[in-house]
Image (cartoon, rainbow, N blue to C red; front, side):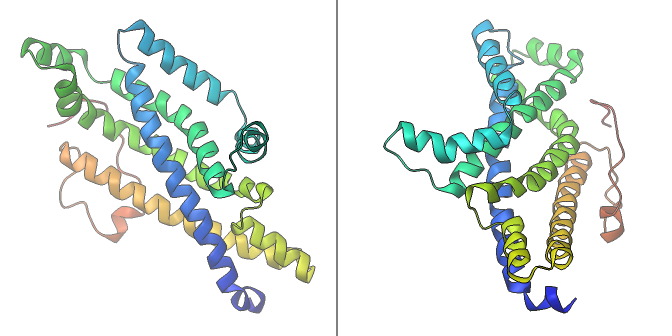
Length: 241
């Protein structure tokens, strides 16, 4: 315990870098997933081809190899240097975004066709239909899987130490090298990773409950600390009031 307490500032510094890469990577992945996922639901063949090309490419490439390309290969092929943190965010965001796009596509396709037909009958534009009817329902379906992807992204940040980023794993490796105490060095990292994961889980459950409450799938009385310790009830798409 004394080992960890004495080095707590170092671990917190590494955790901050891990958290920044996680949040920026998740934000990039979310934007890519929404755009590509919606493209994949269109009837336009070219749009679907672009979406398929992206998802199949980045789901088929290991995030570590992609990160090495960003950090080391591109600077050799071009006159531009890429900051290691930016390379990590870009590689992880592109990789996770490909999985997220499939989540978006599946959630949008799960919206009952009768509701789409009703919006067509009302002469609503594609954009208005998507924004006002489809996404609010699909959003609640996406969130649990998005939450898992964000947790996986956070754990995947452990590989960024391989390109020289001083993240939590890199701090643990340095402490192991400096003290020779492998168990204490990585026990500290394990504790901090666990705390970060729990914070992200609570944040995602807050978003899930808010989305379900707006759709009438969760009573307003279901709130408080204890409600965050259990996942929201699973409901079918379109199962509103």
